[in-house]
Length: 618
Image (cartoon, rainbow, N blue to C red):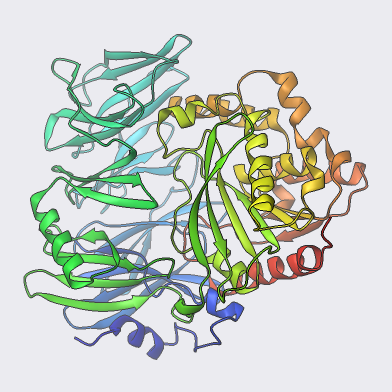
């Protein structure tokens, strides 16, 4: 099989764009040749997302023949698909106003929709794909039910309780709902049942002040569930929970100085094969399964000097998909057939980007004003030119999921190609650095968290990366909220602001999470918000628009129907502050349609060129 087979097949079909100059916007918009790759259970086919113009498509590459084909076009927000057998793929198409559950069969060009999906009165969402069961998935209606993927018939399996704060439910590999959490004023109660026909009984209790418990699910032995907890110290540990005795096991796996992010299961969920771990500069996989350990050793020997992450594997673990990276380069996908000892290059991410011209990425530790050390990632332009640079500061947005890593980031590298430096800040409260780091951010969204961001900006000036008055603060989602806080509480530090979908009203932000959220989300948000409404109101950007001194670019997906934007716009107009609104897709996956990403980067480039690049130093 020839190297680059997927790229050749897609170029012939007109999916890939022609080569552009390495520093052009188009170079950063030429999406991943292989996006979100997933092997079929038998390891003969690879499904992935690819982009064409304003659309995405689900495509399949046949590893045995080297043939690629586009199965169907999907909406740009589509982010979830799953193999149900070796030829059929189920996916959720997000149209904004509704989400549709569809199936497509390889080789038959058949595309089917499941009636009633997306209707809140019927089927609202996929609860669990049940990857080990080719015939069923769990869906959420007003209850949770198991759905036959051939007929679309749904049988409710959630009990007819009327408890207001229930969740999450945890299913075993057969789809039986075995565990659930109930939120009480005093804490969290874990309940268990043996089958869908039994009543739930109390299995365990935690108070609200105890460490987080992340339920990973059942594996193999249906009597044992697996939890990630912080009850053994600052760093997460993996424990088993015996559903016959209701006892937690001693720690099965723990790391000192690294945070376990999640458990990795076999294709049929028969066992835990490894762990995803945050440690050092990036995320890595720690394999518990001996076969996967041997696989990783073969991959690393075949691609020396690279960080090689196994992202998908066949049922028997003999065929692997590997994302191989070196430093801050975009990386390349490979398939590895262990039986035939064949390593094949599938395609590179952003292949038009010249890795030799990428910015330099390093990790930084910053001592805040109270002596607490916060962590950040710095990207500076290539070419050897010394700072100070015009700088863009990014507060962490995915506070529940990840931390900034020393790896390729399309936006910061695009900015580096234009001569900008970037500072990505994991303020106190961010995840991935242990329990004490998260606890340090408790109730500090109106206090020490904004101080951390200000201290990071001052550090960038003191360290020679930036100058006062030539810093832009840019945030997405929760990071957008923090960017608005920074721009109104430390206005002298920044020359412009980019707010991507941020909520300007801290009280409304808290209400949004408290209304209908599950216990873990509530407990996480309690870290940041607390219940001091006066402090939240005082630090809320919505009530401080008079203090905004600089231009602001606002990016929202559907501003006409976004209450957060409507309230912010009203405050900006009332305070007579100039602003720019940019309506753009905010996708839930990493594979952006070419036209959307091009438009997005053009808007960012134009705004920064006008308000940051030419801003005078103060």
